[in-house]
Amino acid sequence: MDVDLNNLPVIHNEAAQRFELLVDGARALLTYRRFPDRILLVHTEVPQPFESHGIAARLSRFALDFARANRLRVVPLCAYVSSFIQKHPEYQDLVAPDDLQKLLSR
Image 1 (cartoon, rainbow, N blue to C red):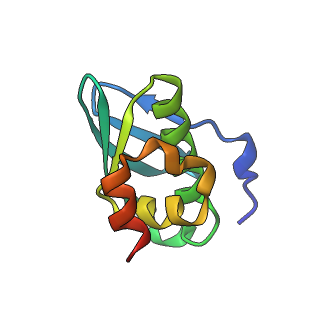
Image 2: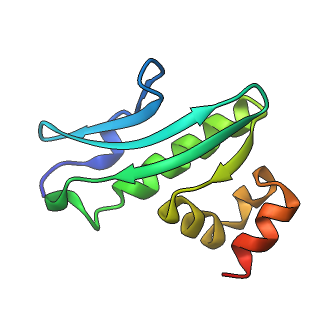
């Protein structure tokens, strides 16, 4: 893959409730459901040719930074986002203590 992912912008498609990254005409996305005090991160999808290039991590980081900036509690329903939070302790404070305990015990 010749594309420099660091230069590709993550787009917040608020109407569709998802964060998107366009790579060579293909769309990677992380869908969410937003509530006044929390955001449920539901599903991450990366087109097969672009898997294992850090795209899901980039979307996850963007979504978690968005949650922090908007003071939202994170509910990671997506298995990838749960795994990402386990590996990146700097985001664990965004998850409610009870949810975090379950997440870290998996």
